[in-house]
Image 1 (cartoon, rainbow, N blue to C red):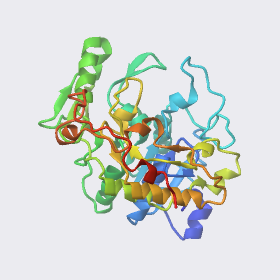
Image 2 (cartoon, one colour):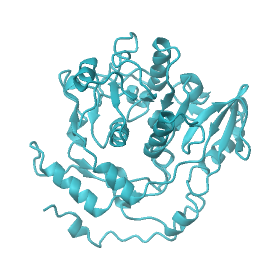
Image 3 (tube, rainbow, N blue to C red):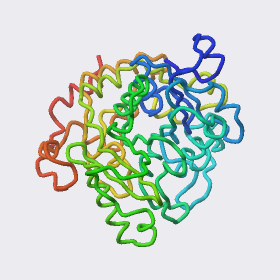
Length: 390
């Protein structure tokens, strides 16, 4: 099921305005591999009207204004990866191609897309509904952070984007909770899994070294990151705050991990598994070659590689889908008219972690004991049954 992305589609649906408008730096693919589509499907399942604006022209108002103003909030993401990673190589050369842009040319996503889109909305909708940031770009830049591209310490992206709320990590629970609270006129700042800006620090939260301090002191930066990293597990994490000038960035404790049943329900939603027709006419989307016939088996990773975002964004606890759910989706893929008899990927880079977790960590805390001594690692049981698709 596609969401409306043009005013003509709104008229066809007989909507005046969507409840929520999601803005993304990628082309609009309705797929379980695309975060903005997952969020849209969950909100729609809960009864909200959702519209999507993909890769809006940031130098005019035509695209950002085409669905009007949402009734509840704007959701903003840079896309499936940080826009600076999408736009530049490790040697800081501009990438010429883009697998998540129709036509394949890297010409439709601005640098620092989250900041650009948020300020674009502020430019044309002065006193608008809340701006809520999400996705990996916002999530990994939620506190003071080192920015490779400018070789400097940047403040939380919330300040540069002038947004109201930042939802960090896998945002299904937090976003749905925010939507329901706004629908009923309730305060959203007590929601778990979010960051916001406050004139005063909350009581009982842990203070991180200030932005000004970590900018000039490497040891303070290390201390900041260590405290931040140790407070991302849903079981034991405490709230954090960090001073930025006269104001404070506040990070509430994270949302609980999804259960197997909740994860199964997400991947059972009615995804179209294709590029929206409005964008199909703009050219081929190379990413479809990989994601259309691939399966997500689980989320999270306990590897804690320094170069990887999974641990901080998806979490360090592996949450696996049930075999029944995976096989059900595999049958859906096999029924598609262009299915050629093979599934390209199951589980991605952490595939071998499917169904394996440290039981002690799930009771106590992730990250304090990296030895993972209680992991029961056995890939063999049911492995033959799992690969049979009847």
